[in-house]
Image (cartoon, rainbow, N blue to C red; front, side, top):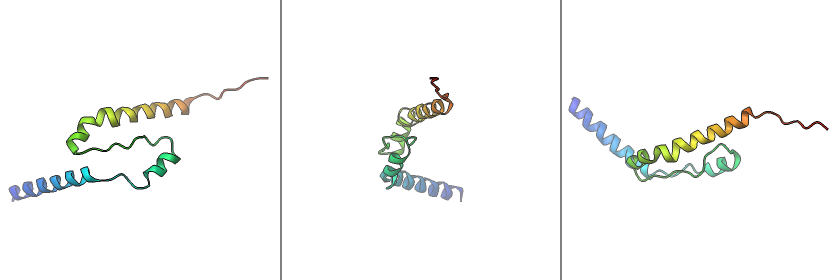
Length: 84
């Protein structure tokens, strides 16, 4: 039974990897990008899960961290007042 479960798990993972690689971006994603400046651009497409893992740090994690820092700096920015 354990061997059958392992075989089924591998089949499901293979199917999910193929489906993931063929998936298209959410149709209304462009609307989110236009409405909210915290939505990162560009959308990152990838040909396989292995390729996604290869580019994860450079294309997803670092840009997300940079955007987080930008938003944090904006949030903590002091009000500028000019006395006249």
